[in-house]
Length: 56
Figure 1 (cartoon, rainbow, N blue to C red):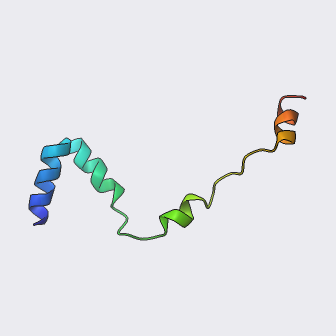
Figure 2: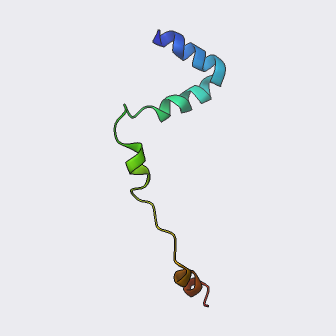
């Protein structure tokens, strides 16, 4: 079954597309994408910070 699935991926996506697809799912289902997505996100600068950056 896996062999058939890989052959279909290769047929539809090509070799490079299949590799990219498999790399996306190579983490074994670990972690929490939603929580990790926002973990290191920087906050937006305030109006005062923007004005200070541009010398206003």
